Image (cartoon, rainbow, N blue to C red):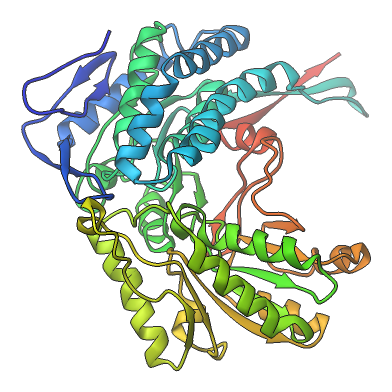
Length: 481
């Protein structure tokens, strides 16, 4: 049953098996038109403390003694609960992020359901290792078991709220941990719905807890710096990751970070031209560029450079139905980079401003999909993550140069390679400094594969066994035979 509280459309928190609210709230904004659509509680430190204590208590209670099979059953019930309220999750995702409905229906909510089901399945596939040991002291059997880390803090971002929350919560619970989650203060709704689903499945109290609020000096900082937290899983911008790492260092808390990106696409002259244009438009402008995997730097082999720039610019101008930036502040940040690009000498091929819709969307936080050219590799626009619907296109003349340009970044999350020469693809892919390389595609994901970046793009890997390995620790047992 849905829980309600006094006031207009409050967003609930969930601690120790019950729904909570707070007197201190801030407005929840629809980025599509700037309207206030609800209120978000600011969790006080005492409630974060209670959530951590509840999680610790769950580990010593029924949740901590639950078998892997029973945990897998519990995860499947969560997946079924999300599926049963699919439309409600989609509506909330669209209202709070402004993203196109089709994107929420085909990626965000289905992937969240898949995350819980996939980790339920993986629990059955996990194998412990065993070694027969011969020594002067006799025979022994060494085998490993894995135990949960304990209380895990999960901090998730606003761009893919439910997908990225479930991407961490599902494996953390699968491994037997108790979770305290804090979603972005700008998109708390689907996390609150998830708490309702978990409550309705009869989850043990304290195994999953949810608090809302801001980051610095608020709930996020209270949680990541809490001495009762045994691990932190965070997705967000690199600067925030650095702050969390400093807080975690005080307690030597393990961290898993998926951070920012300034992703490159390498388009070779032998590529399927139309596929490369369409694929690059998708990788640059999906969710208005507000995905960590989006392409902001495009390098095109010189023989097709002018044709490619013209085609990509035309594709950007044709786009309709794209969503807004998440907030007025983020819109202003993106627009500041549009102005900076011109100051740095860029040619604006398409976009570069604010669209005029002639309806309520003009009160929202939209910017135009934008294609730039003409900047040197040292330009701030080329080097700094913008996180909007914008890419800069530059030419290259040789394969080695393309690799060098792709690697000339503080970030290293994803690179896309467009070529019909598979030998070249296999040469280039291992040489680029990135955690993910797509060849002739973009954002084609398998939940079993490692996900993460290098350099300022993160620490560790998520996905499949990689997530389960992070959220548990191996214990070696040596038995003399």
